[in-house]
Image 1 (tube, rainbow, N blue to C red):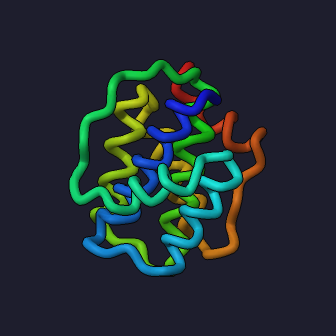
Image 2: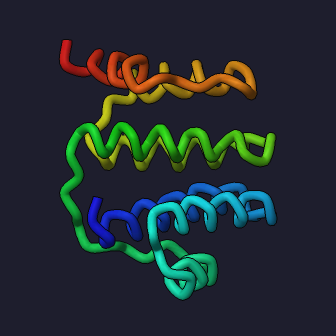
Length: 135
Protein backbone atom coordinates (compact mmCIF):
# COMPACT_ATOMS: atom_id res chain seq x y z
CA UNK A 1 0.00 0.00 0.00
CA UNK A 2 1.47 3.35 -0.98
CA UNK A 3 1.87 6.22 1.49
CA UNK A 4 -1.18 8.14 0.20
CA UNK A 5 -3.41 5.11 0.77
CA UNK A 6 -1.94 4.64 4.25
CA UNK A 7 -2.73 8.25 5.18
CA UNK A 8 -6.31 7.92 3.89
CA UNK A 9 -6.75 4.73 5.91
CA UNK A 10 -5.44 6.41 9.07
CA UNK A 11 -7.74 9.41 8.57
CA UNK A 12 -10.73 7.07 8.14
CA UNK A 13 -9.68 5.24 11.27
CA UNK A 14 -9.31 8.48 13.23
CA UNK A 15 -12.72 9.80 12.21
CA UNK A 16 -14.38 6.47 12.93
CA UNK A 17 -12.86 6.58 16.42
CA UNK A 18 -14.11 10.16 16.87
CA UNK A 19 -17.65 9.28 15.77
CA UNK A 20 -18.79 8.89 19.37
CA UNK A 21 -17.63 12.44 20.14
CA UNK A 22 -14.41 11.51 21.92
CA UNK A 23 -11.16 9.67 21.42
CA UNK A 24 -9.48 8.31 24.52
CA UNK A 25 -5.77 7.77 25.15
CA UNK A 26 -5.95 4.02 24.49
CA UNK A 27 -7.47 4.71 21.04
CA UNK A 28 -4.83 7.37 20.28
CA UNK A 29 -2.05 5.03 21.35
CA UNK A 30 -3.42 2.24 19.17
CA UNK A 31 -3.75 4.60 16.18
CA UNK A 32 -0.14 5.74 16.69
CA UNK A 33 1.05 2.12 16.89
CA UNK A 34 -0.73 1.27 13.65
CA UNK A 35 0.70 4.36 11.94
CA UNK A 36 4.24 3.61 13.12
CA UNK A 37 3.92 0.01 11.94
CA UNK A 38 2.98 1.44 8.52
CA UNK A 39 6.15 3.60 8.56
CA UNK A 40 4.21 6.88 8.79
CA UNK A 41 6.39 9.63 10.25
CA UNK A 42 5.52 11.14 13.61
CA UNK A 43 4.66 14.59 12.21
CA UNK A 44 2.07 13.05 9.87
CA UNK A 45 0.59 11.15 12.82
CA UNK A 46 0.40 14.37 14.85
CA UNK A 47 -1.29 16.15 11.92
CA UNK A 48 -3.95 13.44 11.76
CA UNK A 49 -4.57 13.55 15.52
CA UNK A 50 -4.94 17.35 15.32
CA UNK A 51 -7.70 17.21 12.68
CA UNK A 52 -10.99 18.67 13.87
CA UNK A 53 -13.33 17.78 11.02
CA UNK A 54 -13.62 15.40 8.10
CA UNK A 55 -11.72 16.78 5.17
CA UNK A 56 -12.49 15.19 1.81
CA UNK A 57 -9.51 13.31 0.47
CA UNK A 58 -8.74 12.93 -3.19
CA UNK A 59 -10.18 9.72 -4.61
CA UNK A 60 -7.74 6.84 -4.45
CA UNK A 61 -8.47 3.48 -6.03
CA UNK A 62 -8.16 0.59 -3.61
CA UNK A 63 -8.45 -3.03 -4.69
CA UNK A 64 -11.38 -5.06 -3.39
CA UNK A 65 -8.99 -6.98 -1.14
CA UNK A 66 -7.54 -3.71 0.27
CA UNK A 67 -11.06 -2.40 0.92
CA UNK A 68 -12.06 -5.57 2.78
CA UNK A 69 -8.92 -5.55 4.90
CA UNK A 70 -9.33 -1.83 5.58
CA UNK A 71 -12.96 -2.10 6.67
CA UNK A 72 -12.06 -5.07 8.87
CA UNK A 73 -9.31 -3.06 10.60
CA UNK A 74 -11.76 -0.23 11.13
CA UNK A 75 -14.28 -2.67 12.60
CA UNK A 76 -11.66 -4.06 14.99
CA UNK A 77 -11.04 -0.51 16.20
CA UNK A 78 -14.68 -0.28 17.29
CA UNK A 79 -13.85 -2.75 20.03
CA UNK A 80 -10.68 -1.09 21.35
CA UNK A 81 -12.30 1.08 24.03
CA UNK A 82 -14.95 -1.45 25.01
CA UNK A 83 -17.79 0.94 24.09
CA UNK A 84 -19.45 0.68 20.70
CA UNK A 85 -21.56 3.73 19.95
CA UNK A 86 -24.31 3.65 17.30
CA UNK A 87 -22.55 6.56 15.57
CA UNK A 88 -19.42 4.44 15.16
CA UNK A 89 -21.45 1.64 13.54
CA UNK A 90 -23.05 4.16 11.20
CA UNK A 91 -19.68 5.64 10.20
CA UNK A 92 -18.13 2.24 9.48
CA UNK A 93 -21.14 1.19 7.39
CA UNK A 94 -20.99 4.44 5.42
CA UNK A 95 -17.28 3.98 4.77
CA UNK A 96 -17.92 0.40 3.64
CA UNK A 97 -20.69 1.51 1.29
CA UNK A 98 -18.43 4.22 -0.15
CA UNK A 99 -15.88 1.46 -0.80
CA UNK A 100 -18.49 -0.44 -2.80
CA UNK A 101 -18.94 -3.21 -0.24
CA UNK A 102 -22.37 -4.73 0.30
CA UNK A 103 -24.38 -3.74 3.34
CA UNK A 104 -25.30 -7.40 3.86
CA UNK A 105 -21.64 -8.46 4.09
CA UNK A 106 -20.86 -5.49 6.36
CA UNK A 107 -23.73 -6.47 8.67
CA UNK A 108 -22.53 -10.09 8.82
CA UNK A 109 -18.94 -9.06 9.56
CA UNK A 110 -20.03 -6.62 12.29
CA UNK A 111 -22.42 -9.12 13.85
CA UNK A 112 -19.64 -11.71 14.12
CA UNK A 113 -17.04 -9.26 15.40
CA UNK A 114 -19.28 -7.57 17.93
CA UNK A 115 -20.75 -10.80 19.30
CA UNK A 116 -18.01 -10.96 21.92
CA UNK A 117 -14.91 -8.93 22.67
CA UNK A 118 -12.31 -11.55 21.73
CA UNK A 119 -13.79 -12.48 18.35
CA UNK A 120 -11.57 -12.03 15.29
CA UNK A 121 -11.74 -13.39 11.75
CA UNK A 122 -9.11 -15.09 9.64
CA UNK A 123 -8.46 -13.74 6.15
CA UNK A 124 -10.29 -16.73 4.66
CA UNK A 125 -13.37 -16.13 6.83
CA UNK A 126 -13.31 -12.43 6.03
CA UNK A 127 -13.02 -12.88 2.28
CA UNK A 128 -15.72 -15.55 2.34
CA UNK A 129 -18.14 -13.10 4.01
CA UNK A 130 -17.50 -10.48 1.34
CA UNK A 131 -17.70 -12.99 -1.50
CA UNK A 132 -21.41 -13.21 -0.63
CA UNK A 133 -21.91 -9.96 -2.54
CA UNK A 134 -20.84 -11.71 -5.76
CA UNK A 135 -23.54 -14.41 -5.55
